Structures are given as C-alpha cells and as structure tokens.
Length: 334
Image (cartoon, rainbow, N blue to C red; front, top):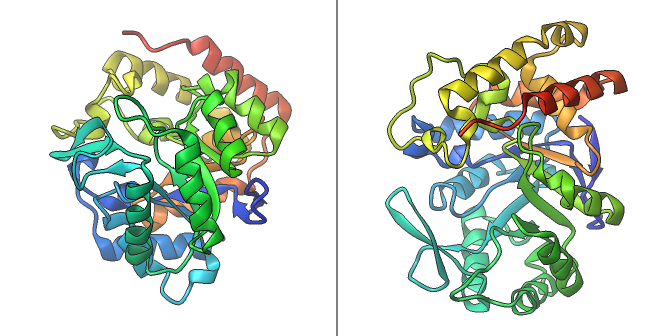
C-alpha cells in the first residue's frame, strides 16, 4: 500500500480508502449486508494496509459506524477513522434534504445538533477521538447556519480532543475556502470519476495548489466502471442505481457506451496484469489534485482487488489515452 499526507493534519492515509456506505446495508443496495462479513471485510482492508476508513451516521442510520467499531476492536491504532456530521433525522431541525429509506433527512450544521452528533458517533464507534470529522453536506436555506458558527463549535470540539482534524464534503470552492479560513479544514470529499470530472474545473486545482487532501467517492460509479454491471443486470425497486437522475450512466443506452469503452481497454489490463477496477482506480489516483480514492467494498474479494490498485503506476501515455477516450465518450444522453 502507498500513503499520502492527509492535508496538513500530520496523518498519513492510504491512497485507496474504504468507503463504508455499503456496509450500512439497506434496500438501496439491492440486497442487505451481513455484519459479520462486513467486519471481516474491514479487517481484511486493514491487513492490506488500507488505513483510511470513511463512514457516516446516515449510512444505515448508525449501522455502518457500529460495524466499524466491531472491526476495530484491538486494532484502533491501525485505522484513520473518518466520519461525518450534518445529516440529521431526529427531528425537523435544519433544512429538508431528502427522504431516504422512509426517513426524512435534514441538512443541519447547527452547533446544537453537531454537538449531539459528535457524541453519538463517538459512542457508536467506541472511540474517544475521531481522526477526521467532516461536514457531510453544506448548510442551505431556509435554515442556513453560517460556516463561522459551525466551524466555531467544531474547532472547540477539536480543542477538547474529540476531533483530530476537520474536513468537508460536497462543498463549492467558495465554501471550501471559507471552511479552511474559519476552521483549518484539511480535506475535501466529493464525487469524482472519469465519467464525472466537474471538480477538475476548480476544486482539484485549488486543493493541489493549497495542499488540501481530496477524498473522491463514486470513482467506480457504484460498480459500473468495474465492467461487472452488464446489460442483463436487473436492479431491485428502490435500489440507488435506479436513480438515473443522479447517475444517468445507468440508463441502458449510456451503460452500453460505457461497457464498450471498457472493453476497448483489454490491451491495457493485459499490459498491467490488472482488472478494470484497478485500472480505473489507478487512473483516478494519478489525476492532479487527487490524493485519496474511497472505494466501497462489501466483501474481502472486493477490498483486496481495490487495495492492490494503489501499487499500480500507469505510464503518462496510457493516462493520456484513457483521458482522451473518456473525453471522446462525451456526456450521457438524456
């Protein structure tokens, strides 16, 4: 495994991190997860040198954090535990965000809800300090909490030793700058893949220039870029992949185009003796500004495959060929 600095936190995190959203289970994944298998999956990741474990309260309504706690018993020193706050469901405080698994979610970065969330996450994770605490989504109207107010309570909690470093997720460039100014955020987590390259316009260059760690998610587009989601795949009602407004590449015609693109890289997977997943992860990790790639995994086989991608180094000509191919692919059809 290879490691890179987590911004200026003093922490060194694996290039490939384990995203624990899927380990929260639920119908959005088409099938539920087994907690014992999830524990083995996390422990296998640790054995492979993956030390960045990213979770959140909203992943299975606390289930993902509890599974992470079970996996880390006796191995706490092997992991950088990253979790989040700001998605609130206990009551209607905050601004309505979405309904998920029959539960109403609100964006709330109010100091009072943040303090409750911190204590709940510490309890579920069974730790006394969270290595990287991230705001899950920025605050928004009608109940907008100024970044200064949120960061004031978070820096206080950091000073109390309950948080080691602060990060943000899903923010605009201006919001990122304000979070850094107000609280010294060391990382930014956002969606980025070869099929979704919007962060290249502003976020990635800024982070590269200012030594801000970046944690990319959906870099495998929920399995589409592994080549394993074929045209015959049938999704369960309510499964996240059926939300084509969020991910139009899953529309059959667009999926076909992606699968054809992946098939054209057979010579590259042969050259590097790797899988498509490993090729895609390695390409992502090599892009300017990308420091860490979060990859979900529901079993030991998947995390092993993903972790090995950190050792793969693509030559510049192949990096450029892949970029040219995905640019030529164009945007997904409506």
